[in-house]
Each structure stands twice: as structure tokens, then as C-alpha cells.
Length: 245
Image (tube, rainbow, N blue to C red; front, side, top):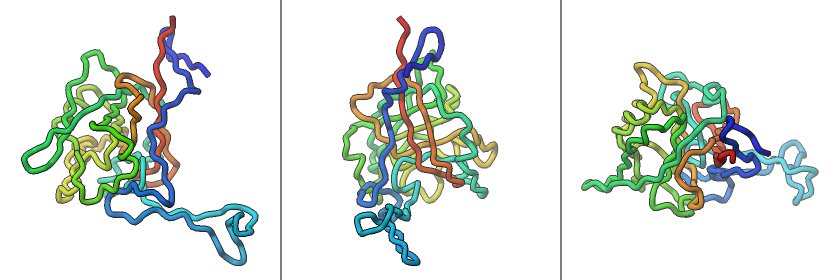
């Protein structure tokens, strides 16, 4: 279906580009030292939740951690005393977004730091999507624990503020360093916690941007599962912006 953004632009809603990573009970993708997710057949009071084993329906319980097991979107409740639900934060789900690809700079201490460059002056988007380089499908199955993954330089906050970015998406387990003594400097600066708390902003981590998707502007659809939690599994989807001829 064709949806017109204005007189000059439109998107084709039947051509989505999914940036989410699936969650399964045999995955190797994980972060933050959590055990693998589990999907277990319910066997209670004579009920059997497996058609294969003779039950009437498949009926499984699922245990997982949104921060450690796949694509997720989080609110400032991730770092505040009150667990602000990300389900309450997102009121709109479509945003104009810019996708950029960035390479980390290796420091003498072994850290790999990603600097967000100044964006083109005419940039007018609400969301920034960062694809880290090099990029490969191995990101879908990594165990990030104790690997000191790349993280964002705190200097990038000025760029995000200057361009009024509300939604930040990245293909890493965190915008901050894996072991930073609990400082979480980028998280705090992005949400301006505890001084202001920019509750309209979200961070989405552990996305995957396929090589075939080119850098540039898109329409982002950002949907989260309606969990009353600081973070929830999410499915960010991009749509190419087409020009009316």
C-alpha cells in the first residue's frame, strides 16, 4: 500500500525493512551475563501444551530478559528509581529517521569508541539509527558478555541535542561501556537524569541493519510489546522514502 507523507514523498508499506533480531529458545545471542531464554511446554493439572506430544494446542511459557536477549527499546526508567514504563512513553510510532554507518576508534586502553559526527545542516529527523562497522550477520549470534563491545563517545550528546533527536537506535548491547562502574554516562546524559529526565526519549539496542540497506533518511516505525517495564522487546521497521514524479 502506498502512503503519502506529503505532496512530494510517499512510502510503500508492503516493502518494510525489519531491524529487529528474533528471540528463540536455541539462540546464542546474549548480553549482560543472562542465561539463555527458555520456551517450555506447560504441563499442569493434566494439561499438555504440545501438539507433537498429543496435546490439543501448543502452549509454552517463555522466560527471557529484554535487555539481554534481543532487540529492545528502553525508557529513562532504565536508570531512575521509579521504573517508568516504556509502554507509557511511546505515544506515536512513526518517525522520520536518519541511518548512518560509523566505525569505532580504537584507544590505547583497548576501548573502541564511536563518535557521532555533526549531521548535515538540513537534517530534520526525530530518530538516529547507527550501524557500526564492520557489519556482518555474526552480530545476530554473538555473546557480548566480557567482550568490551564498542560504545558511544559522550561528545555525541551535543549532536543529538542540536538536532533534537528523540529516538536513538544502535546495533550494540549498550550505548555505554560494558564495565564502567555503573556510571552509564551516555544514558544519563541522553535522558538528562536526574536533573530533567527527558521522558519523551528512547534508546533501542541490539538491532541489526542489513548491508543492503543504504545510509540515508527513512520512515521508522517503532513498535514495542506492551510490557509495563523500563524496557520491552521491540520491532523497528524502516520504509524507504520515495519521491513523487
